[in-house]
Structures are given as C-alpha cells and as structure tokens.
Image 1 (cartoon, rainbow, N blue to C red):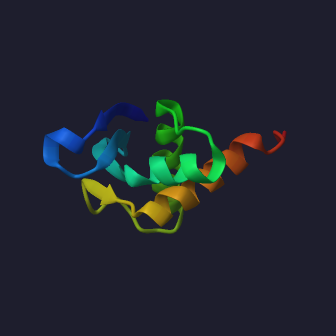
Image 2: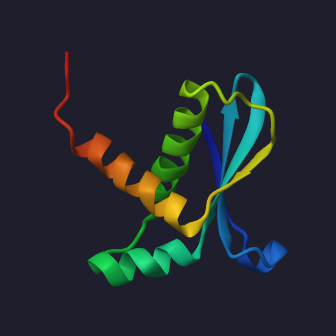
Image 3: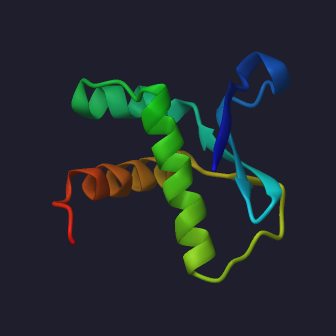
Length: 100
C-alpha cells in the first residue's frame, strides 16, 4: 500500500525520490534515482509524474517480492537504469489490456 512520496534532494543530498509503502505490516521505502527524471525527459520529451513515480517504485517492490527477495530492508535504492527499466515495465503493464 502506497503511503508517501518524498523528494530527498535537499533532505539527504541523495538526488532521489523516495516512495514509502506499507508491505506485510512493515514500512518499506524505494528510492528512485532523480537523474532518471532528466534522462526520461531527454529520451521521450515527457515528464515522470508523482503518480508514475509511485508506479515505478511499486513495480520494483512487487517484482522483488515475487522473486522471493523478501522484505529484509527498510530502504531499497534504484540506479538510473533500474529506475528507467521499472518505468518501462510499469507503463507496459498499465497499457496492457485488462484480462478477466
């Protein structure tokens, strides 16, 4: 379950956008690399919105859990390329026709 989106550039000098989730009763944050926003804009001319950032980080968390990686940490950090990979996958899932 999504809980919060935190732009962490000034807070920690991390150049990241943190998305906080509640999973299995535990707080888990996924940190997406902020430079991915610039790279995506260069590649596509479009911006990563807050709701899309939640989808990116949620996709990463879901994929990690499905791969059996569990919830061993409170914070997961994505590289620029990982952020863009999960962005592409999240968009593909959102655009896929619904199955019944």
